[in-house]
Length: 221
Image (cartoon, rainbow, N blue to C red; front, side):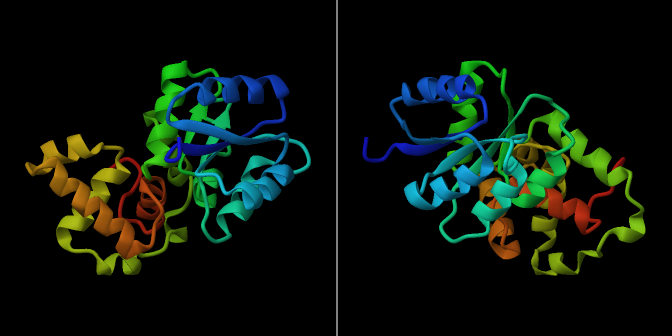
């Protein structure tokens, strides 16, 4: 299909790569255009085949998934990166989000979850499971408040956009934000789009990180 989502699978285990590739390539809207066994290969492959989404293992030899993600997303015309992990509360969660990853997926996730995760990320949204959001909050909770920047960067937002960003950072979906603010879900989507544009963010994952980094949201509040 000409409009199919172009995918690259990156994992140091051949069976994992091939298994994911077979599952995803079977979908009518996906095309697997490459596989890589480590981060260095992934960086090179990303530049050659220009995928839409890369499924990236966190822990690999030669170059890990974090460094590969930083390098890939530091270039122009970058793909979305969905990190693959064995552990739900992986120590790399925060670093990966800071590197620009659009979300996390457990390697043993059901096939339906895998397919849906790729579609969500390909559509430009972020995939943040509640457990990942909790991990992110816990990371900030351990940091002294004095180490957090003040929210000067957020002054470009309207009061309503700031309210929406706060709710995003607390893990609410568009539907939940719609119910909380008593507005249409399409209105929430419009606010989210403006927030990302004004703050030059890729997706909701980076919005969550920024909300905590700037002190807009404090752990435990």
